[in-house]
Image 1: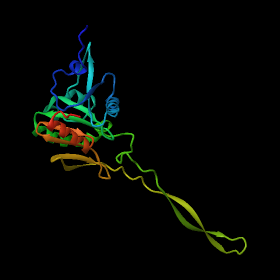
Image 2 (image 1 turned 90 degrees about the vertical axis):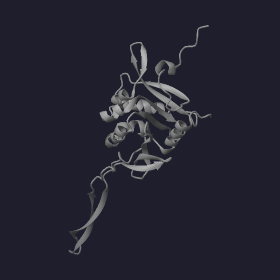
Image 3 (image 1 turned 60 degrees about the vertical axis):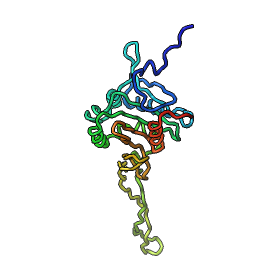
Image 4 (image 1 turned 30 degrees about the horizontal axis):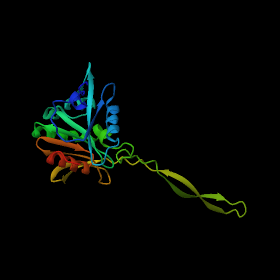
Length: 249
């Protein structure tokens, strides 16, 4: 007749407000991991099977003695070696939500609460220079070739140059084409670019590849909430959940 033990949520994050409703939640530890391995583990967890239309929260944790605690926003940005500046870290609240939405492929997202929009917004613009590299292991599927990662192989063409050779029968010289390869220079990788776009009536900044497809995006949906998410579909779902609240499914 022992009472039921505390849930994972009660153990790890009993005081955090609910920023966005998620049907399930799991924990991923940072202990004994490099930044790249941690980001890969987080993405692998995000890509695990989910019921269609559901969201999963992924809590980033560490062991402290005999207990387990959630990382706060600053700690998380530090362990993944992000290059977000100190002004940005000071402009966000300690609690944040990371998770996945079951779409094809799964969407990955992070939601930060903001205490100073006037500081956070220009700090995000400054972070854009490094944002793709800092978060690519989490938001971009590394199993697919990315235009920014593609470097074309050396291309070869043939050049026909006539050369004179003497004929053994007539004594006349004839031209025999000899094919010689010409090696062209490697084209430079195509860099993704940030653009402004309106999605769900929200000003967003989208990272576009060479074909104009979204790699991931971010938006301050209000002066207190910043969303970073891997697709437009995931962004719309987050907006719906955060606007309407819990959705019956």
